[in-house]
Length: 391
Image (cartoon, rainbow, N blue to C red; front, side, top):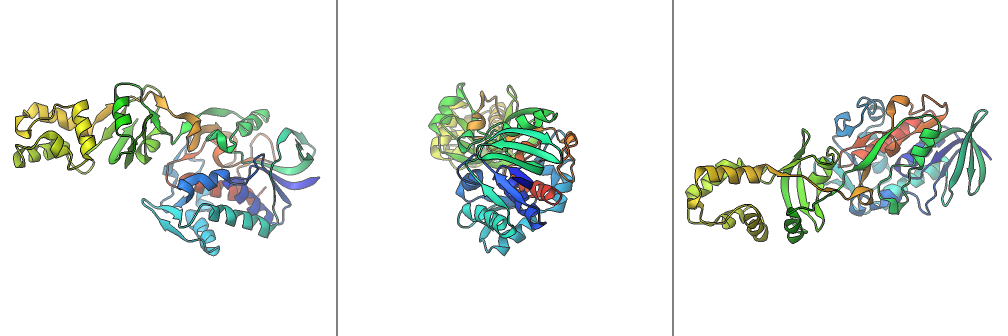
């Protein structure tokens, strides 16, 4: 069986690419070893799918080649995908910070992608594994569990290593290496931290407690919520900085993002000299958290009893809490994979390999990783569309 295009991976990027290519009249087949298309789409955003971000721009992406993402993002924007969503009548809302979520469920997004494939004539074949890929005259030959297939263009949309329970494998990286591509070191991104030192007890006691903060690491800062867990720290602020963290690095957390900590403490001391520190902190945090912070860091006593140096130390602890995570939860819970196929060996305009004509790489398999908040989906749509226009 000979096709114009075979897309490996029925995820966000792969389905977008398939529908785009088929709309040009190309005969397209999508292959996936899973029993269901778009599993990662279905579980994303707590089941509501944060499908793009109103404020998408290249600065929201990490790559060793930071200019690479600009071309595709400029040619298929968040507004283009929002138009597609609106065209299918999918209700959505902005949650915060430009993050767009489905009103109902993530299957609305998967449904429109599959409908686009059906409309354009792209076939999606599930439960099909690929054993071997080789170059042949005029394209590629694949040996699959469903037989041999030939194609002119082969698109690798296999994703990264994140959440292996959904079927993630390193197959895309294996193919890239087979055809002479460099694969940059991969690691878990947008992932919770684990804590094993004396802070573990605090995290366990406060498990489920969420607090607004500014988390910083290696020159990057994000204001979002922090969530204490039985294993350590999670929440949007932590997931964001995790992509910039390396083992041994210090993470700084400002628990008073709306205040100058020292000014606030001095004002509390002047206004409420007889109030205990845990009572004062209880106005900003839960009573339990205020109590535990005092047990962890401070001796709780009436505000009037703290000297100026002691107030400065309190302020520093609250606004510059320094901690060194033991590690991360790894690919098991990571939302994305950092690193991947070196983009310096791929065309930024067409996403075609510069080493093997007719071979394309799109989506998460590439060394392009977005911030939390819908940016990784927008990269999937943009890169899939860019390849689909030419493959």
